[in-house]
Length: 381
Ligand SMILES: [Zn+2]
Image (cartoon, rainbow, N blue to C red; front, side, top):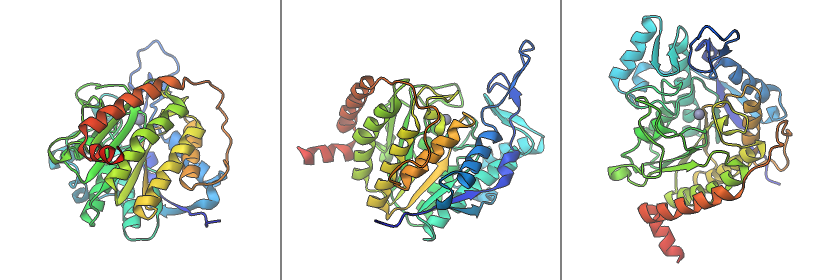
């Protein structure tokens, strides 16, 4: 039997200093008639549990720990505009600012954001320097909604986008991004919308645009532009899709796209808010679904990138189940034969047929409209 690999995890304690306060869910508001307000869903507790499950859960023997670091301002400019970075610095100096709906830069937030960006850059550099194959950046605040010129959806800096720029600057020419967070990875897509060097693929619930900070719809016609035409593949899935439907979408749409693209680097954008119990999502993945996706993405990395895979933490707001789903994803990536951890919440039925019809129609659309997928279809026929 082949030797089981390990996962190098990059983390820095200071990311817990970011605190978006309490309110009615993520609004930050106290209407005056609710006695018990809740923590903002993007809080430190969710990450504390991800940290502890990797430190003390059954997967812990497979984990090596590494210290993260803050990004420098000049590093941020590879993805973000100087004006936007200046806005964030000034907001920090002024003692805080609401950057957009439900996204609050408070005292400690900027330090945490710089740590999330720098820690993700360190994780990518570890791969690029040949020190590790499977590397996970356990970071917050999340990043995949942050666009070059503005923040969005709890995100200030696009951690993965910065890591992609580092890979491109280090000689990689084909980076594939697979985003399984329940929301559209609009920030990453926007950053590379005109590039054929970065294939951004996002599986998400069909939530559409949500205001000025998130003008993108996440629909199938957002294909990229110019040289980047065809290199953004959106896979909006019906609410309640579940494990079976996600696997169908991964096998029918993601695997062929990645195979045809032939990446030299793969990044898995891991959000556990696609789980069945997430307060922010309407999809129904269980630990089995995450495990299966992890296994397929790990296989793609082995086939195309000598096993090199960067995993970047994004959303995931159920305080305990997100940690379990992360554990399952990493078990899958490691291709462990039997589950190390059983699912405490896996007892809900799912509709298996609806998503197959939706995925079949998206497949037909992409094979008609995306040149690099068209050619493959021709070869097969
Ligand atoms: Zn999300």
